View (cartoon, rainbow, N blue to C red):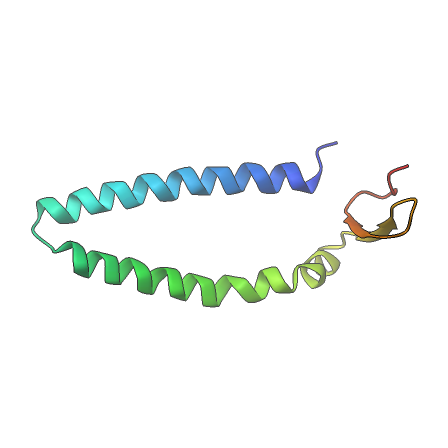
Length: 94
């Protein structure tokens, strides 16, 4: 069974590729039409600030989101007990 980390990594890479391609495409599109790079940069900056304000609270409360989805987060400790690892699987690693 694929763990949540692999799924998250896949979608993160996918959105990074799509986002980079769209930024490059829109930059060229605006440049051809004569809109200055300064205004494009200001618009992109504002959009990223809005996304940051919108998405960061969701990532901060990721444990609550997992709980709402019914995914159990188990706390596992290493043999020395020095670290606490959040594990999405149903068993702690041996």
